[in-house]
Image (tube, rainbow over all chains, first blue to last red; front, side):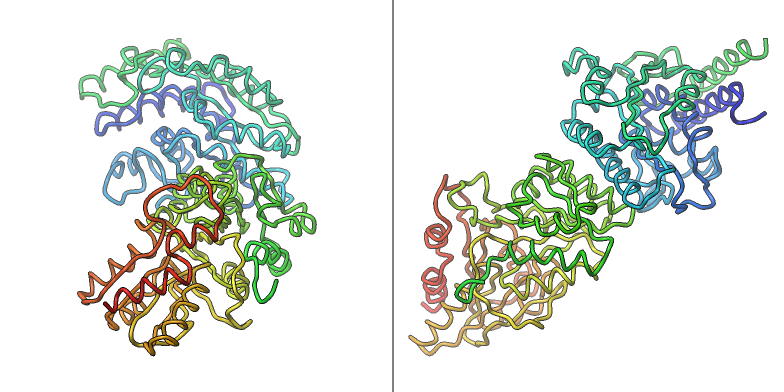
Amino acid sequence: MKKDDLIYLEKAAMDIRINLLRLCNKEVIHIGGDLSVADVMTVLWQYQMKYDPDNITDENRDRFVLSKGHASAVTCFNQAAIGCYSAEDVINEYATDHGRFSMHSCNLVNPYVEISTGSLGHGMPVACGMAAALRMKGNVTSRVYTVMGDGEQAEGSIWEAVANAKRYKLGNLVAIVDCNGLEADGKIDEITGLGNIADKYRAFGWNVVEIDGNNIAEIKKTFDELPASDSEIPTAIIAHTIKGKGVSFMENEKRWHAGKISDEQLKECINTLEKAFESRFKG
Amino acid sequence: MKDGKSFLRNVIGEYMTELGRLNDKVVLVNADLAGTCRNTDFTEQYPDRSFNVGIAEQNMVSFGAGLAAEGFVPYVFSMAPFLTMRACEQCRTDVAYGNRKVRMIGTYAGVSGGISGATHWAIEDCGIMTSIPGIHVFEVSDANQARNLMKYSLESDMPMYVRCGVEPTMNIYREDIEVEAGGSIEVKSGFDGVILCAGVLVQFAIEAANRIEMKTGKSIRVVDMYSLKPLDRQAVISAAKTGRVVVAQDHNVIGGLGSMTAVVIAEEGIKTKFKIIGVKDEFVAMAHAPYLYQYYGMDADGLESAMMSLFE
């Protein structure tokens, strides 16, 4: 099965979810936001990005900046899926003292992390600087992908960078907003008054695509149709997702922003995910 | 240069073109203060290596970190209070934690912002920036020193913060004055007491020391502690062994040079008289910088009486 095959990617996304849940059985992770963005991250890392784990300083690679830094686990497992390390490495080493993997990610200990993140509103502005740097170097083929949360859009620094990316014509920048509707304390709509996020990016003159961020086919199609990397208008992919997607008791529940599951819950979750996959693709 | 004095922000701003010539990876990032930071020579000569992100200091620093991640050497300029406080977390997380070779250059150091008011003072920046792991912090006192520090900034791989004021400073050093992380300069020798100082206050300390020597015959050493971090411990230890130390700093009395010096003396267990001269942990709304230097006892009169009080 080829990696551009939809069923391959669906299976890959399921495997990512299973690994996330296995880790969540061992440690407290930001499982809700990991699961919401799992489909986007799977297609991004396992299909879309030019990134060779054996040549990670290749100038022509695509860059990735995890602006919603708490989605480190879903990033690590996707990196594992393309051969940066193994999923077992991630599970065994996660949240160990001086380990490579933890609640957030750091470039000092993990060479596959381009930029250390964790505090919100940082990754996106740094990604802008990287995109501008690629332009200065005459690199017209690489893109910089950054993944943000929708709650993160309340950080003022995001909008400083949004205006800046347009002004510097960073068409090589692709900013994905994982819109799962929830932040740590509850519903974003009830906390921030951010309103329609897509409209805000449009107002800043960005190329905006709104998609179902838990639909593999739609995600893949969006990536396939991205403007050329040497174009002049940055792209925002507003990915509408479900926090906790794929695990019924976690979906749209703020309590599962972060947490840990029991052995029994793990067994039940994996069983449900596998059955759902079989009924969709093997029936 | 003017009557044997220099404006260090002009010196640093103008020297950027030389850095641009020396290294084609040098880029400049500003947040709508290119004029204030004297960056326009560089931006005119190297427009493709100049970025003005608008009035957005957080983005300026993060953007710089992104440029550095891709192999450039960004010089990020703003007024010191906005750079180190508005964008504090960006300096700390995107630059220092990421270990990026970003040069953060803050003008309007100390109370030199004077009549603009305390919004434009940087009296906390030394305390803040020296408390961030993994960055070097410098304050310049003289034109040749400033130029050589800028040249040094190309050689060092460490994240770096450099502060300078807007008030004129006396030309003190020769062209070949050496600067490096952890260094200090004995501007004037002396054995009865030492003024440890930095930046615009070095000239006042020299005058104070000369006056004391002339009036009393006591010999007072003046040491320019231009490298706030890493701090030259040996210079502090040697000063403390004279038994009289005045620390003169153009920032709040809490944090920065004086506090760091006191820690060294305490750790070494040296018995000495000790006095910190700086902003007395208060805001003055708006006043001219020379008035403030006098008001806080940072000028030659103030430093003279501070040192003399240690002989009582």
